[in-house]
Structure formats: structure tokens, C-alpha cells
View 1 (cartoon, rainbow, N blue to C red):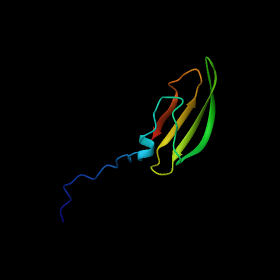
View 2: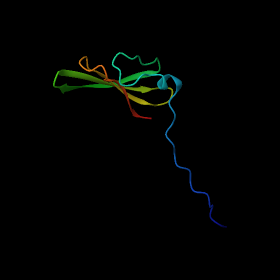
View 3: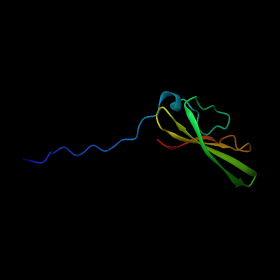
Length: 83
């Protein structure tokens, strides 16, 4: 029996669901969506004060998000950690 000449397929990251793809990243006042489940949160000291960062996970596609609630930085907000 000869070995299969085709290379094994590499696992590709899953695509975001349409709801996650619609989240505006890096904008503090942007909204999430209903399938995001809140995880843990942590506080971080910045030069302007304490900032809360909360982790979320989408039940639909599994994308992991963090939301930085920094009132001094309008471009904080949502960011993707893992797809």
C-alpha cells in the first residue's frame, strides 16, 4: 500500500458568526450582541486611573472578546483575543 500523497489538512480557525463580525472593534461605546456570555473581569491601572477589562465568549462561533471600559480612551472597547 502506498502512502497518501496529499498533505494532511491544517485546522483553520473558525469564522466569526455574522453577529461577531458586526461588532465595531476599538470603540468604547460599541455594542456587543446577545450570544456573548460574560466571563471574568480584571482591573488594570493606567496613568489616568483604574480600567476594567471584561472577557466574553460567543456561544455561536466561540470567538473570545475583551471589552476595555476606559472612559479616557474612546478607542478602547472591543478586541478579539481568540477565534
